[in-house]
Image (cartoon, rainbow, N blue to C red; front, side, top):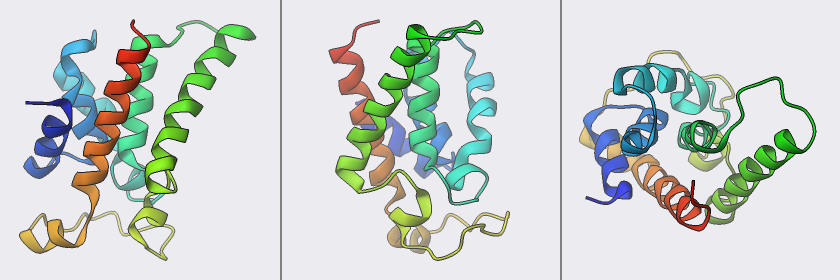
Length: 150
């Protein structure tokens, strides 16, 4: 199974968009699956259904931090290099979807959505492009990792 397929399958199992990405890369990460899932749990629906940055993008950024990030009170070039990496991932995602903002990609006018997620029914999956967006995020990140070995 490709990482794209794994990420999409995670979403179809009920994981949020951020968890779906994180768990598709768990074999590369130095953190327990349960901790990864909890860490990403706040970022679904554009950060707790605030419809801000897409959870799959947040997931990519968290993985990039775990793989390439720094762990001290860094300043200067170390921080700049990492932020450049994050901006490059965002650029690639925006190139494909026009935005990294959940509500913009879903065509929603609400800025803050009700905290209760919609039921994951067949109708839900038909009207939401989220699974494909998540798959694209997984592909973007996988390609980036191939180009930038750890």
